[in-house]
Image (cartoon, rainbow, N blue to C red; front, side, top):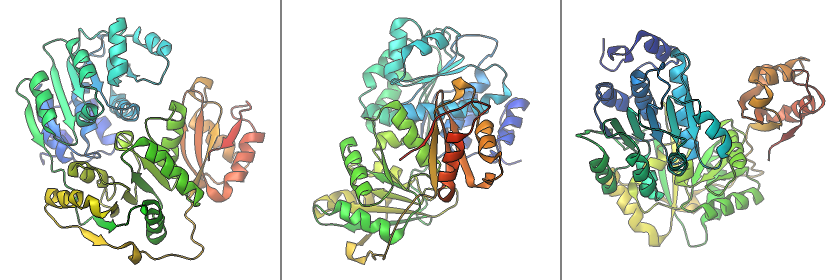
Length: 460
């Protein structure tokens, strides 16, 4: 038996069976290094990149310790963004399937307080949330942490970047002195060590290699003239023709402006940033995940917790002043054994940032001129899927199977041309292959789901 199998851990048989059913085969490096210590009750300070499996590491640790028959909040996970909090909650629920009646609650800003207050009355076992909203509930007395056993700070570096230190400190003051504290961070600035010293007791320090497999990622830098960023980005898209791209900007205003500019040039581009309403954010995330948009333009903060499978390219529109952030960005492509593209733009005045990246990754970068990019006649980059929105969701008892049944009932649409279906409280989204999208919309608009009429429309 190798030590990187989950069966080598002292876990209950029902948990091991559920892990196996989820097709988790071998532990990732962060899981193999941290889980034995987490299960042993030690505090852990861990550095690991996005996509390394750290969520499962602390989720398994939480679920191993909590007592389902005790209706008190026993674990708290603090996340920097709503997107990451939602992703963490989903992973916890998947891993908790083996434990009946596990109550997991997500508490984030941007959502009404009323339903959250009602859910808190049912004493959730595990709470996942963002600092501001957690603090609000603690101040109201609706969230009680006196029985807390495990505290997790996920993506701690981003929380510090966003100025959440004061809120986090206020939340931690409301927790028992005796507890297990797990701190996970993608990067490792001095401030992380400082906060660890404040809140952890003799933590096990774990560093998983933060550099990515260069053999899997083709990285090219393009030296551009001032004012040529958008023009060069369009040329990059035309030259490489990636089916799915994540474009990083440093500011949210720049994100929206760039997405609008790309749209005018005929590209299907959507922006993801902190200025969006919750419904808008949900729709952008759905379209990015189900291949209904070719290009997602995002800030680093908004992209945390983003789950896009098979991302063809990461394009760095503007280089971060922190080389560690750059490496973190490009690590979103070339995952799970596939190859990826990392393409970055810089002006002569930004050459120091490029040099810092070379020093950090201990390897030179390839620099090209935009003139090497080839134009293509009649070029068009369209996403393979289209997303249809249905005005009915979980609260209206709509399920994914109901939508699939409505679309395939008359056998004019084959099920294999219907993609991902996402169900929210009052809305549902279904991805349809582009050539049959109009036909599918007609079926949903004119037909019924579970014997009821629902409005449907195509997302931009």
